[in-house]
Amino acid sequence: MIKLVIRFVTLATFLVAMIAPPVGKPVFAAGGGGGGGGGGGDPSAGTYGSGSPSYPSRPATKATQKGKKTHHQSSIDDPAFAQGYRAAYATIYQRNDYTAAIEQLKALAHDDNPNVANLIGYSYRKLGDYKLSQVWYERALKSDPNHVLTWNYYGLWQIEQGNREQAEYHLRRIGEICGTDCYEYRTLAEALEQPAGTALVY
Image 1 (spheres, rainbow, N blue to C red):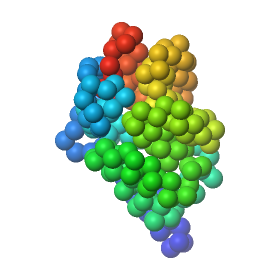
Image 2: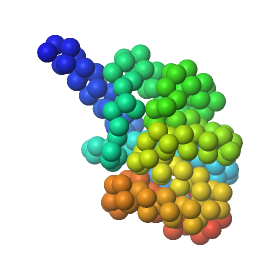
Image 3: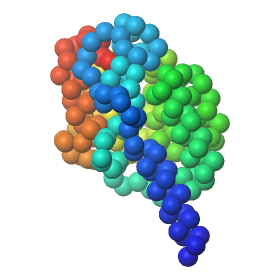
């Protein structure tokens, strides 16, 4: 019984750490030039809200994922994994050091975890390496086809590559998973509303 309680507390702590948004930063911003996270004027350099984290910036809501498979989440019982993941998360969203974050995430040795693979893909996208970014987004979706944040980030990747029809497919997929009112749907829909060629601050 005590082991079960300890396991539950560890899981709850990890989930709270992943869901809680950073303090004092906006959630997202519409298109525009520049943005935080690695370079003025480069549409691939910004993040949601000029450097503010986009994962998982859903205030007072739970993650909008369905059908998560238990074996993808086994590592969250490991406090060392949770601590390492939080450190990498901070490296990405607080320090915008994507190269260091990739090293931290790979060092976790859980590349099959969709959260890890997605953040590696996100980091490569912010570094402008779209090919490697795509590899990691695909890896995250292979691990969990309903990983809604990967559909969101990969949809933004599609927009940046000029693949608006593919981004619309991603939007529909997100709608199937979490509906049209979830954070991931709304932010990708907003990005798609911008005229083609608009520099996105995401």
